[in-house]
Each structure stands twice: as C-alpha cells, then as structure tokens.
Length: 389
Length: 139
View (cartoon, rainbow over the protein chains, first blue to last red):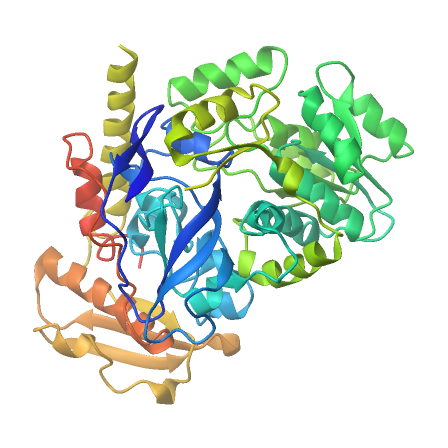
C-alpha cells in the first residue's frame, strides 16, 4: 500500500510499505478515508522527538471504514464508518477505568523509552514514534487499530467525514483542556494558540459556560476563524499588549483558566524567542515553552493553567515562582480521547461543534510532502492539511 | 550539510533512547535480588501463585501477591532467587509486564508486523532500544 513516511529530519515522502495485518484478537483494519496533519507531527519532522526510524508512517488523527475484524471484536463489523482515538488504550487497566486513557498501562509496546525519560510510560499513539509504541500511522491506505472496541467509534449518520475527522484528536484534546482545566460557568478563559486544538479548546470553554473566551495567536487568518467560526474573541500578540488586554477584559484579575495549545516549538516576539531557539538548537533545552510561560504569568491568582501542547523533554526559565506565589494549579495531559469522543460526536450531530473549516487544504496522499510544507510554513491560510488516501 | 546535521540529531537522539531506556536496569550497578513490581487491576484471588509467564522463565523466582492500598488493585512483586545477571533481570521485568497484560487484557499487545521501517546506521540504536522495550525502563 501507499503511505506517507518519515525519511529523516524534515524529509517525508510517499512509499510502498507492507499492508497492515491483524495481530491481536481486538484489532480491526481500517481503510483510511481522511487523515489530517497535526501540529505535534512537526516535532517529529523536525527531529525534536528523536525516536523515529526511516520508513515510519506518520499520522494519528483519522477516520475510515472497517475492512477486517479480529476474532475478539464485539462492537464493530466490516463496513462500519469509524473515527479512531489517536491514543492506543486497552480499556481495562486502572488508568483506562479511571477514564485517563492516554495513561494506559497496556497500550505501548516499548514502555522502557518513556519510562526512562518521564518516570512512567503513557499509552501508545499511532504514527508518533517508537517512544509511543511504534504503531504505524494513518497517512496510509490502511491502518491497524488495536483495542478497536475501546478506541474506534461508529460515526452517526448525518455527521460528515469532514466533521467527524476531528473527533479523533483535535476536538477531544481541546475539550480535555477546558474540562480538566476546570472551566466553569462565568469563567474568563484565555487560550494560547489558534490552531485546530486551540479553536476546539475555545469552543469547549464556550459550551461549558465560560463568560468570555479569548484566543491569542499571531496569524490573522486563524484569529478571523476564531471570531467567525468559534464565537470567541481574538487577540494578535504581535500587534497588541496581551497582558494589558487580558487585565482590561477581566476587571484586573486575569483569566480564571489559561489553556496552552501551542507546544514545544512556540514563537514569541522579542529576545525570549532568540534565547529559546539558540538553546533548543544547541540541545541545552529540548522544548520552547514561551506560551506556557505567558499562560502562567497572565493567569489570575488561584487560577488554573492547562498544558495541551505537546512537550517532550526539558524547558528553561520555567516560572515556578509565579506558580507558587499565585497559588496556581498547573496540569497537562495527552488526550483521553475515548472519554470524550461519543459526547463530541453527539454534539457534532446536533451542530454544536463544527469543525469542517479546520480542513483548509484537502489533498491526495501523493501530495503529502507538499501538504506538510504548507502546514508547517502556515502558507495559503493553512490550518490543517487533510489527506484522502 | 543540512542533511548531515539532521542525521547527527537523529543519531544523538537514538543514542539517548538507549541511555534512557536503560536508566534503571543497567544504567548503574543494580542489586540483582531487587524486587520488581507491577500493580494489576484485579483482585488478588484472580492470580495464581505463579502467574504466567512468570511460570516459564526457566529460573526460580520468589513471588509476593498482595492487595494494593486504597483499592488500587493487586501488587505482583517478583525477584530472582539465584544470580542470573542482567539477562535474568530483563526477562523478569518483561514477564511482569506481560503478566499484568494477560490478566487485564487477556493477550499480549503485539507490535505492527511486517514493519514499515528500514534498517539504517542512524536507526540502529533505536532499533536496539525497541527490541528491549519491555525489558528495560523503570519497572
């Protein structure tokens, strides 16, 4: 089959690879109909998460049709149209039973790597390096889905592929940030990053009853989407003083909940960015945490900061003093998709959660390298490049 | 030049993978009689005295099964009763991970096969780390 593979740092291309096979009784094979780029893929492309091998298939956010079913699968049959959570989770361990699916004890076939890095291993993730289990990704004609009864969800009739695709990752990730960040009715919520995940976090905050939701980015076309499609307020940090704006909009308190949806390659104006770039390139820090610093600084006393962006290693100049002296709660997680996807599909079917606008570029798998280039460089108004294998 | 830098970054990272994966097992002198443990989402009665695959390691182990505090399931701890070196520790750790998975899931999650990856020089350290992906780490 054809698949879009990682060939080396900043080098992806379509290759012929072996078709996936059923390996466990709970597996299904899915014929991929749509698979989207994600900002977190850029960390793999750039070599910032150095656990990729030449030929690894990229992609973790996808939707398709079941074409083969393992002996132990109960909830799915050939022909089902399914959206699949990007995390591989067993549904049976203590963490899955607690609805913390990305922490699954049994979803990663290579737990030693992440145990060494982080002290314990999260579950697996499709197309996201050998540190996360080495599972082939979804930028391919077919993909193997382990624990399909837990991680694959039948898409309701009436919800289009274009909309349901983002129930795989962007929508549950955003929802988790608002939910576990503790958004309550009446809150003011600030979201750093107006990509797909940031937009979904903002929409989740609105649906959870936030009084005001403000999204911060530097790309006007994304901020325009935030206002027109999400219904949130938008701030461009390159043309306004974010701190002054947030104080003005919150009666001098600061946002109750700050959600960071940027990740380890954050951009910021001024010398801080140059500092982080130099340290990252010299591998003196692995991740650039500018948006996390901002979120912590601007959050109100006693407020909550949720880190949604992907970080892999170590950051410099972490404002621990602000965390302590303002009494903040700082929390983060990879997404517990299985916890939210059924609810999100219902909301999609009711029209409360609209996602189609995120797919600004739809293209064939053969155009995958070009798609990632446009996506990475944020050219041509790109929010997400979506492939149709 | 850019490609060379990229390859260097990958190789350095892959080397780091091996180092971090070995962090507890082989990163420093380790007591070979140390207890290794997993907590399983089950009741103690659901485990036999020597849950598989601990029963087929090929060397004797001492096993303790006890309820985890706070309703967190069951702790399964094991250690070697005679010196078997680093390979013995690795086998024991892998068996404990698999014992947990057999109880909780009923089978061992297999990696994708056939793989899509190519063998390369820069990928060799990472390939080594994944071959031993259940044997090392912090279990």
